[in-house]
Length: 147
Image 1 (tube, rainbow, N blue to C red):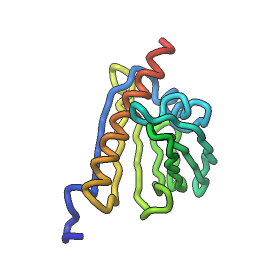
Image 2: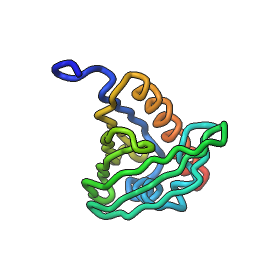
Image 3: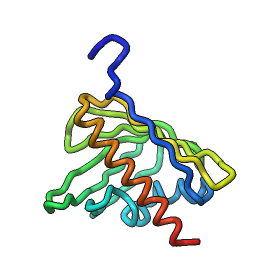
Image 4: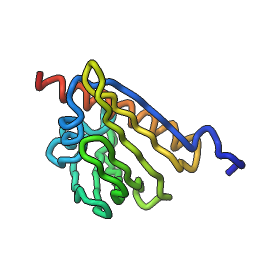
């Protein structure tokens, strides 16, 4: 790793979603809801387990278009309902990464900011960019259906 980090080690995405921070926090942390919206197009969330406590673990199963399954797991480091989630991120036993999700009130609903750090390569950065972009789209569409 270059001193000061590389461009691919940090990813930040923002999207305004037409729902309250409380509603978004619940959609992000309740397994039954996660399964409804998680993943980019073509990926289906087949399992979600969440122990929503500091030190608690989560595990999400993603079925890819080729029917293979990718497991994402980690441990919660900070939980401030309805404003903040910080957790580790491990894909199928690979190196640990970190995700921070902020839910900030906005005049049109909530500004969701995802900051994903500690990515080991540009390839993984680009996969996460695709995945998180799809997740934010799926989340907005899922909550839009409630209106």
